[in-house]
Amino acid sequence: MRLQTKLGLAFAAVATGAIFAAVLLANLSVQQNFEQYVHQRHYAYYEQIANNLIRDYERTKAFSPASLDFFGRQALQEGYRLRLESETGSVIWESPSPATHGLAADENQWAFHRTELYTGNRFLGALYLLYPKTELTFAAAERAFLGQLYRGFGLAALTAGLLALLVSMFVGRYLLIPITLMRDAAVRLRSGDLTPTIPVNRRDEIGDLALAMNHLAESLRQQEELRKSLTADVAHELRTPLSTLQGYLEAFRDGVWSPTPERLDACHQQTLRLKNLVSDLESLASAEAGVAYNLAPLDFSELASDVCESMRPRLEAKGLSLDLSIREGLTVHGDARRLTQLIVNLVENAIKFNRPGGTVTVSVHSEGPTRAGCPADEGSPGKAPENLPPPVDAMAVLHVSDTGTGIAPADAPYVFERFFRGDKSRTRLTGGSGIGLAIVKAVAVAHGGSASIATTSEQGTTVEVMLPMVKQKDDGNG
Image (cartoon, rainbow, N blue to C red; front, top):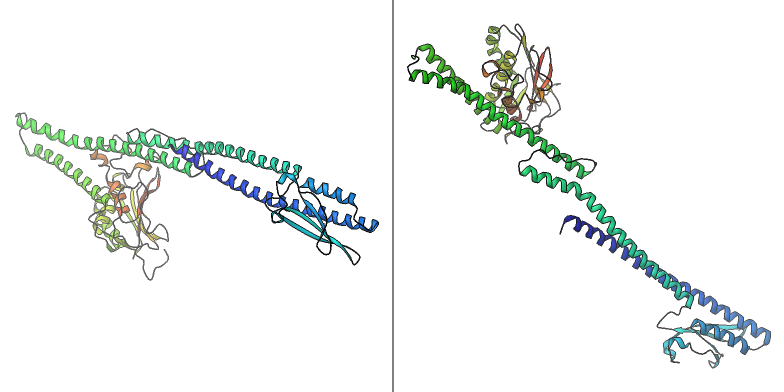
């Protein structure tokens, strides 16, 4: 059975049950109140007969047979009996029994209401109103009224039930149309079609689910494009040195070239290129996997200062200056080797894309409380190791800036992806493998932090890395 049918039947059953219960309670309440009303009306009529008999007796000093006969016929039409007894209990007068009830004169089948008649202090007799025990006697108009009321209840219940069924079918269809669309989209995603988009035109939980499905499809499309790009980039990076080596080796084999030291050195350079590429891929894989991390309290300020000072000769050889602004005493829970790799990659990147005579600026400070202890951003490569410290109150912030030409706004969201290069014409020799910033991101995420482009313009780019600090008892202002 389809879900729409189930929802429709469920809604209709609930609505019909509620309507039936309401009609039943209303019916019982109306019948009880109507019976009470009829009793009160008949009792009032009975009291009126008693008062009329007393007035007739006061005028004629006796009960008028004509009055008794008149009241008896009225009681007979109402389905009751009247009886007048003397002080000693003997029957003075009694009206005939209603034939419609089929009751015999057996007094056990009748209930009664007794009223004593007095004129002054003189007892005239006792007037009895007798009615059947087994049923309440209604007049024809009253029975017609109840019949119309019950028919109205039945018609209202039927109409409400049909309306509930129609509304439930409409609501079920309204709820299930987007679910059906999402099911179809999921089936197409499973089959490899990453193009389906679910129209989102509602602002409820189902709309949120449809939006999440669209984001999932978009993410899968991006990941598929990155996968294809990664495959093509890896193939390109491997093809160039392998083609060069193949050409040299074939020339040596065919005797076209002799293996001179210069030519062997060229082959050696291509071999080193392949080795470095494989090493970068291994570093990225291990950084993203979060394995082999030796986490311990570490003076990040001292580590950053030592790494930057060790790279100062390289900057000077490139004609660049180094500007350090490092706050002392910032301790993080980290792996010294991995964080060293992170800083080296950032400084190498700043050297590579700087202008001649430019400056590389490295600053370390603290901010907090902020994103400390938060999990990695959704979609970030890598995962945090299980032995991360508990949430902290501040973050150590590393900024590495260059004075290059900046990053194109369209390229900024992708610079941390593997093998991404904003300038597609750059080769590994001029632009690197495109893995350095991906390793930076993976290492930062594995430490419970983040990496991002803080600023970029035609005057340069600043990369920001945030790492959770170890909480100190004497924390200063951060």
